[in-house]
Amino acid sequence: TQLLEQSPQFLSIQEGENLTVYCNSSSVFSSLQWYRQEPGEGPVLLVTVVTGGEVKKLKRLTFQFGDARKDSSLHITAAQPGDTGLYLCAGAALGTYKYIFGTGTRLKVLA
Amino acid sequence: GAVVSQHPSRVICKSGTSVKIECRSLDFQATTMFWYRQFPKKSLMLMATSNEGSKATYEQGVEKDKFLINHASLTLSTLTVTSAHPEDSSFYICSASWGDYGYTFGSGTRLTVV
Image (tube, chains in turn cyan, green):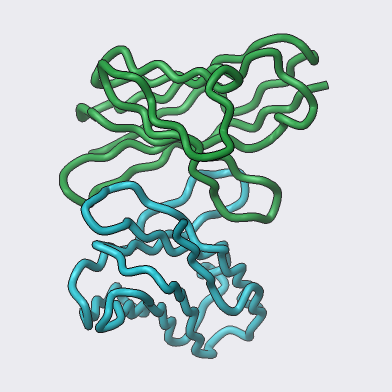
């Protein structure tokens, strides 16, 4: 069974600060996704990474897939209150499109 | 594009009754849909993979007879919670796949069993 551990679990920071969220596993993934979820809503896909070492940028968000495709990170620059939410990574085992979600990181950005 | 509609958004039912949740892909065809369950302040737990025209594939520990999944068309999958009990109260979310890595989630259904 794949296990995806995210760290930190909770993060409360001031507006303008930078932060990094980590997603780690002992399993190799064919692809990995990051989502953001707001209370009472479904997760919204932010990015999909498929190549080891791949880096993708989405405005102030930078996503990196580990060289061995076992881990990933999400870096947010100059966080804003609108970034507040639950961030989830999700990995698909080799040869599948079935995604298993990580433990989640709850981010709160204070104005 | 790639919109998924999930209905109802909230439902309260009495213990022992059954509840059906619908997941529709509005502007695309989805041969595969996924059903997740989410406990308060926790991550999503995959329950089953719903395949159009065939039986769903359930994850370990998920009762097939309890959570009935039907994927009768390329745009609709349903999850029926049978003989619901208070411990089945949860947030249920579906997602539908499009393209190689495209996934869109529904807005979720909050089930409360009293």
